[in-house]
Length: 166
Image (cartoon, rainbow, N blue to C red; front, side, top):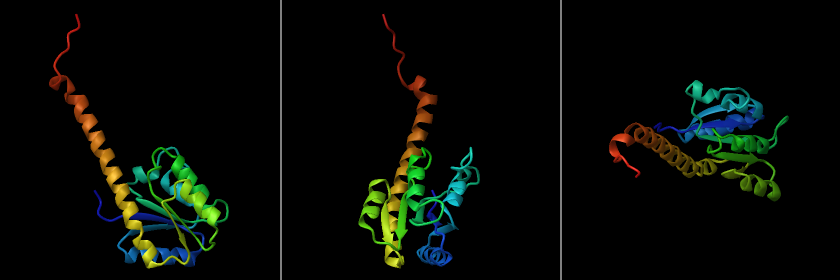
C-alpha cells in the first residue's frame, strides 16, 4: 500500500488552489489540482466509460473541493462521487468562504467528511489524516476480502468435504 496520500484539490480560484496545494504538500500529501468540478470528474473517469484513475495508475485518496464554482458546485461534485460505485468511499471535504450553516449541514449529511471555512489553515489540513486513515483501512479490508474470495474459490473444493445427499 502507498504511504503517501494523494489528494485531488478542486478550486476555480488560482490563489486558493495554490494555497491548498502548498498546505497539503507541507503536510507531505501528494497533490493534483484542477480548476473545475468537470475536470475533476474527467480525471476520476466519471465523464468516460473507463475510470482514468485506474487505467493510468492514478490513485486518489481524498477530494477537497471549493463549494462555489461556476458550472457545478462542490456539493454537486460530492453527490456525483458518492453516487459512483467505484468512487463512493473516497472521502470528500468541502471548503467555502461563506459560513452558511444550512449549506454546511447539507454537505455533511450527504457524505462530506468535513467542511472547512476559507482561508484553509494548516490546522485544518491536519484534520484530514484521520479521514484518510479510515479510507486506507476500508480499502485494505476490501483488498483482503477480494483476496480471500479468490483463494476460497480456487481452493474450496479441496478443503470442504464432499457432501452426499441420500
